[in-house]
Image (tube, rainbow, N blue to C red; front, side, top):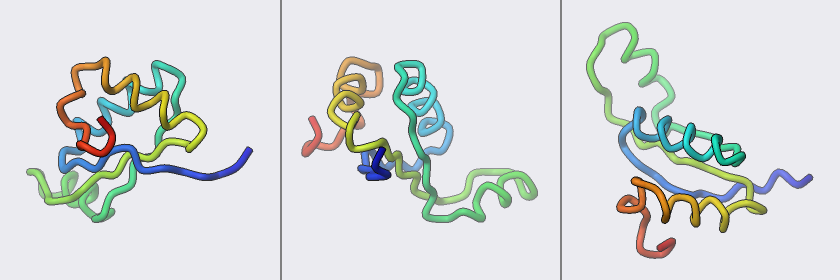
Length: 85
């Protein structure tokens, strides 16, 4: 199996990104979350509060279209970018 990942969404809310990840994984689509500020997780634990970061959700390219379809049918459809919808 190839390791080609494709960017599905980029959002600034980690909790929402994890919720979307859980939703897609319940549909058997494995996701990878990548932060543009990896230290933010530690900062949240030690200092509390929300830090500024962008979370990118990646899926394997072989299930990308299926993932987009699931998002379109979900409560998260309004966050799809126009090029994906």
